[in-house]
Picture (cartoon, rainbow, N blue to C red):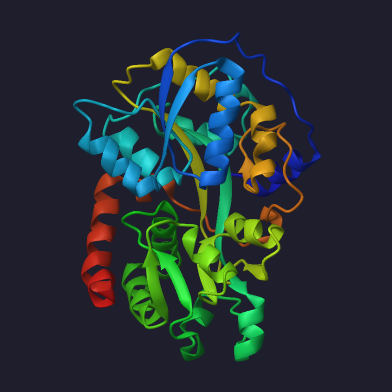
Amino acid sequence: MGLVKLAAAALAAGATFFAFSARADGNLNLICSADVVICEQMEGAFEKKTGISVNMVRLSSGETYAKIRAEARNPKTDIWWAGTGDPHLQAASEGLTLEYKSPMLGELHEWAVKQAESAGYRTVGVYAGALGWGYNTEIFKQKNLKEPKCWADLLDPSFKGEVQIANPNSSGTAYTALATLVQIMGEAEAFDYLKKLNANVSQYTKSGSAPVKAAARGETAIGIVFMHDAVAQTVEGFPVKSVAPCEGTGYEIGSMSIIKGTKNLDNAKKWYDWALSADVQSSMKEAKSFQLPSNKTAKVPEEAPKFEDIKLIDYDFKTYGDPAKRKELLERWDREIGAAAN
């Protein structure tokens, strides 16, 4: 996808401004699958810009997919913003989301447009972020732990009870980790790895970013998360160091989708176009959000993980966003990992 070149180009670019329409009326029912701080910032900025009243709920991407699927006959949501792309692609393949070709597509990176094309324009990329982990340097010093630089290092017995990762049924972050390991190792070896890792995991959290927040607070030593979530804790002043695994790692294309059957289609389109604009994406740093924005001219935060420094795998979004494959992997995780963790 050329993410390295695209990231470098974005870093050199300045912000452009999208001429948005005059203030409007009405409501918008939004599910936000990013961190609650950026969700609230986006909600407030859109209301101020448009006069549209936003009813926002924060849910992990796996939870959102399940909710949208359950409410398919009588949708209660208009738009779904952010969260890993795999559940968005799954919703698109099941006809749960609406085709929409935004006039903003021409301003987006190739990887964001390809995400839209692969889904028949039923979703679009809004940001990208690489998978890794963050660890608490003070805990490591106190317990004389060695920095884990590779996936294999996380199996070290010294990390027993020191690792947190989310549950892939509720968290898009954790599903990306599961799919990443399968692509790196092969399915059988990946599940063997996860069984061994389970001995070191103290908790499978509901939210994808929760593990590194726990590490920041000193409740665990290591949180497996998207690296930008670890960076956010470092910027807040916590003793957290980010790591990109040496064997390679997957990445997310955080996405956005309009729900089929929305009662507020015009307002959903207004949000969609607005959220793809350079000025809106440039402001995400204000909420300590450090992903790579999808708009080519949006400002990339200096603190954001540099894709050129990370060994990225050629993540197969089509295969691992497929409903059948996702169901198969999650059921196996429940049987072999989740059951053993309870």
